[in-house]
Image (cartoon, rainbow, N blue to C red; front, side):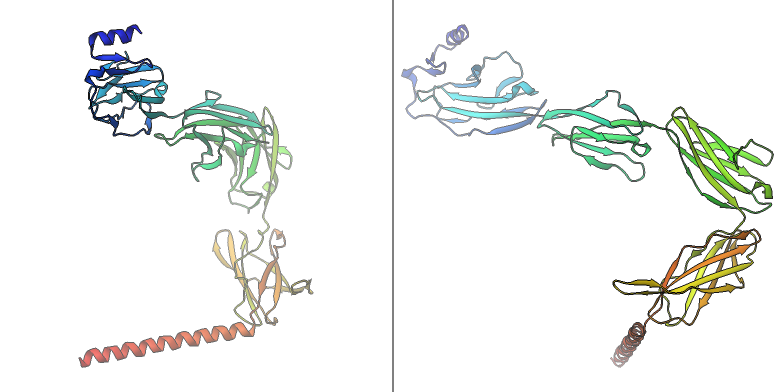
Length: 454
């Protein structure tokens, strides 16, 4: 009340109404009633920015406009009551707030000090960009294989931010996982290890993100580049095991259960998670079963590699659909350093309909090899299977022998012979295509003649 009396002292024409509003003395009251030209509005402003709240009155006369927030009077006319330097009157009676803070949110009332005590209310909402806090704070999480891991990020801001979880990948880019404050990973293994990113976004300024590094502790896991390796005397051979696991592992190599040490022909090379055993000038005694064994503090893992001089399995490269009614050209490649000595081919018809499938009898052929070498370790060969039924399904397998013995029987290769209708359709397409080309040729010739006559 002392503050209001002070105002009245310096501005003697202002009178105080019982409700705390101000007005001029009745002797000076205007003949035309004042009215608001501006309207109350909801204003949204980002924290730290400046906002201006309008209050425009027609026929103000000797009345005084008050700005207040709740019960606190901010200004009276052009006189500032509040001590907060961020508030000031600009223009006629607009209220400007510089560097808005979160506590500035609320209703601002422009009050006309007349007998009717009319108010104009502006609502101010302070928008706050998102902030993030990861748990744990250092962004490092370590867990054992098979356990459940909970990653958590806490976000604040206005509006309340939405949290998004991604797993980062340098090759395929980030993968979206969930939209929640926590990410739960169950029964984790080495594939779960990596960098997880939580992002928060509420539409105010830029999205913010934090990374969490997840490390999985597990016994070493081994994959082999090739579980079967072809070799021959006098050649060099490389066996490769790849070790997965965050703990440094010790790698040991064995041949037929005997521990191997480096020699003048045998070398072991570690490179990151890739371990190589190189055997130079391969000898007959080097054939056999090899194993790579990895040890760490959490366990031991072993993988096997067979080194053999026998040919590799047949890899069929001919298309499944034959171009003929009664025969099929079977083409395949074989891995073998020594020349091929014998080829065994078996085929059979597969009797089938929508509900029934029955294989026929195998037809066995021994073929004299006439392969073509395509590189130092591979041959390509083909054989025409004749006297087939049209519109039929067949299965074929191949086995090949070199000086070290027979290879494993190949996987079944399935192929199909054509039917008469398909051949007729193809013939019709060919004739129609030729006819269309003939018409185009005639039109082109006619057009050329017309040009010449013109």
